[in-house]
View 1 (cartoon, rainbow, N blue to C red):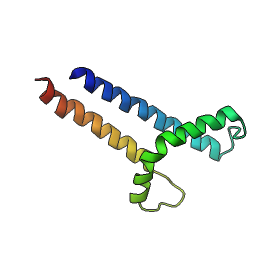
View 2 (view 1 turned 120 degrees about the vertical axis):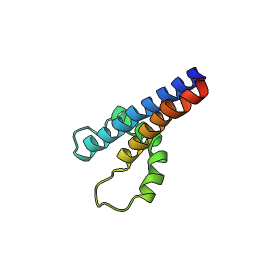
View 3 (view 1 turned 45 degrees about the vertical axis):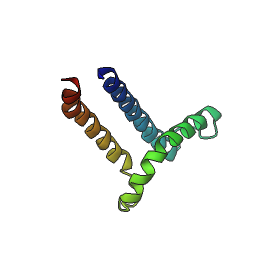
Length: 97
């Protein structure tokens, strides 16, 4: 059971880093720091978009309009942090005892 919890924790940690990379990519794209016509760069952007958008879209629908500010990645990071803490502080002691 411990292996399953560690695997879930690792997956959540990896998704956290992908979410951070997606936010950084979107900033770099918005300020024209990266060359969007480069095929490799566009493939990275497409991958990050396809991996994060299905999870961020429902959060964006619930959130009120804040103008040009998108805080849905921050909300998702807080949810991931909550799930990880819940898993290790509540579920792990119950399942491992």
